[in-house]
Structures are given as structure tokens and as C-alpha cells.
Image (cartoon, rainbow over all chains, first blue to last red; front, side):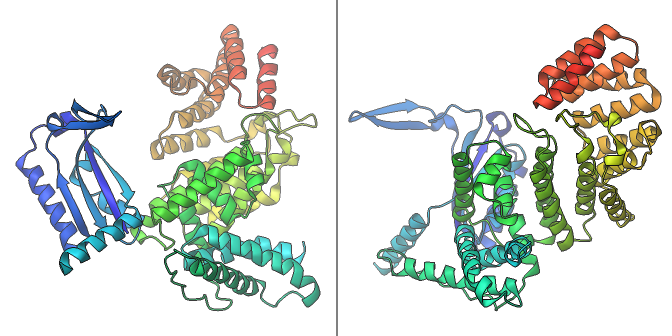
Length: 126
Length: 398
């Protein structure tokens, strides 16, 4: 089953990551790849780069900033493929930001998972 | 107890657990087991009780579940279901019940959901019984169970035993759930009787099952002993009019000596293993039970044990209990000093026992006006009418 790990962090703890931290992220991603469970993942640029889009009454509304003004900000995500929730939670507990931020773990809808596999198959066949 | 009732009590959890593990679906397992019991109610009186009722029920429930899976498979548009391997006839997977209770108490579920799942699927209570036990509408409880089972299914919470290194964390969640069921029964909140024995009995039954599966887990042993000791006083805890009787004024002849003896024997088996909070609380309860009268309680030892508990599992509630014991062992002044930070802290501002303890200590320290105010305050905060009445009587006596 595929699980999305949404990584959040409070901005004050996230300013200017040190080299050691970057190494830790690299090592963690590497561990996911070596375990054969990495589906995808990315780190995001800061919230100052965010633009929120809404369509209201046929009009496109753009807002500078993230959609929710919360204390913690989305900083990245991973999608992993593991057998059960406990395994996903164990990996989530090792994400480098988990000590000061938080990781929300949610299963990907099985339909969406299948659609992705179909798309990949089509891409390979084509 | 009829053979069917006995099978329901003794075999049901095992059958549900075996099916849930094979099917990976708690609802499907529960429905199939209900049908198997319905079939037994028809077949057993005429054909006789099978030699191994558990095996009969497992096989019958398994067939019922397969019927449902086949029906679903032939339904248009559904993905072809993979029919799992049948459990061997009569196979008694001892650890299946442990797996089931660990799944029902998974820490990824809300605590209310863990309680509901455990009572429904492990203890076999009906939705109506659980709803009545926790004073919520049946509909609310039904929705809570559906939501919880949906989360188990959709997030793929496993029905397998966790790794040994994760077992301790998972077990402590189970113990917390069982103790919550017990305390809800022991000092029920809201309207209704102050002691709901049914919930206490269910919690003790569940703790017995857990202890049987894990006899070497000393905290489980401690938890079972603690429940037995607290419940041994059930008959003495309220008078004929339903009024709650204070611990010191209880008729000790009404205490259940068999339960006390069983608890003491259980505690004696824990030996020199690292001590945990449930064992310490059980040891405290055992000291209370050992006293011949209210004046013979070994308060200095109890105060020490509360000190230990405050280090193992620090909480302001433990500090309140410690202050009560210190008050008996060393006098009200020392106890009031312990209580002062808890009163100032404010986290327990709405906790009636804090103000009752404060009132008692003030009274014994000679501050009668302060004591009356504290008794009244405690009465206002009491969780149920019987407790409230008991505190009001103290306020007017002072």
C-alpha cells in the first residue's frame, strides 16, 4: 500500500538548514531507495514562493502565500510503498524533521495507485 | 450457563480473531461470527453440542465469510477478490486474540475508538451495551465503530503481531484502554449508578485474557491485580440508598477476600522484574486491603510507593494521592506543602478529588473555614450525584 508522508515544520526551526541537516535528508532518502519502498518525494521551496489558486464564479483568484495560514508549513513530501501502517509509521518516525516538526501519514487511495501504475505501463509501452 | 453462552464467552474472541487475521477485515469477520452463533443456536439444541465448539464455530463462520466474498466477487464492477487460505479446522491460534486486541488498541486510533473496538470485538458486547456503558447514543457509538474499522481497513493497520521492540509500546496502549474501561465502570461519570459493574467485569475479563496470553508481562499482571483489588471493594463502596461510602468508612467485612487473595498471589509472581506503574498502584491497593481497619493502614509505606509512582509516571493526580498518604503518615502540614504546587498549577482546577483532599487536610490542620469552602468546591465538581452527595455531607459536617 502506498502512503503519503506530508512533512511540516515551524518556520523558526527551518531557517537556514545546516550542512549536517542536509546530509541527514540525503541519507534518509537514500535509505528509502535502498529499502525499495521509495515511490516519489520532493522538498519544497519556502512559503514565500507559494501562490494559492482558486476558481470562484468562473474567475481565477490568486493569493500570495500558502492556502492555510498555520504555524507549521508544508516543506515536502514522500510517497512510500510498504505493507502496512505500522511500517509506514516507523519510517515516518525517522524523517529528519520529525524531531521538531511533524509528519502526517495518509494512505494513497487504491484507485489512484492503480491509475498511476496504468499511466506508467502506458508510458513504457508507448 | 448454556453451552452456547459458554462458547460465546470462551471461544468468541478466538473465532473473531482467527477470521479477522485471515480476512484482514474486522467487519466481515464479526458478521460471519454472528451468523455462526445464530446457526449454533439452531443446530446445537437438536444435533447436540459439538466436541470442540470453537472449531465448529470457526469452520461455520469461515463458510459464511466465503459466501459473502463469493457474492461480492460475482457482483459486477468489483475487483476479483482473492480468497485467502482457510484456517485449518479447529486450529486454535492462541496469539490471534493477542493480535486482535493489539489491532483494536492501535495507537493510531483515537482512544474512544480503541475502547469501543475492544469492547465490541474482543469482549463481544453489543453496540447498545457499549453505548449504555459510556452514556452516548447508540447511533453515535455505531458511527464511532464504523469510522474506526474504516481507518483500520483503509490505512492497512496490520492484524499481525508487532516486532518485539514495538510490542511494549503497543501493550501499554492495550493496558491503558483496559484500565480506562475499568475506571469508567468503577467511578462512572455523568448520571446513572456510581459503579457500573458490567464495565468493571468486562475490563477484568479482558485483563485476564491478556494475562493468560502474556503471563510473563509483569505490568499486565500488575494491571489485573490492581483491578481485582479495586473491584474487591465494590460491595462496600455504596450503602443501601446508593450513597457512595468513603474509603475509611467502608465495612471491610464486605470486601471480596477471594479477589484480594488472588491479586496478592498475582503480585507475588512479578518477582524482581523492573517495576512499572500498574504494579506500584496494585502494591498500594494491596496495602490498603491488608489493613485490618482504617487505623491500621501502613501510610508511610504507601506514601513511599506514591513517591515511586510520581517518579515512574509523573502526574499531578499522583501527587494528590501522595499528599493524602503523606498527610496520614507525617501530618497535614507536610501534605499541604506537597499539594500547594498542584493547587497553584491549575491543570487540576476542575478535579474534585484534589479539592476533597485539600479540604480534608485543611480540616485536620485546624482551618475549618477553609475546609468547608474546599468541601463545597469539591462537591460542585463531583462527577456523579452519589459522589456529590457524599462531599456535600462533609461540607455541612465541617
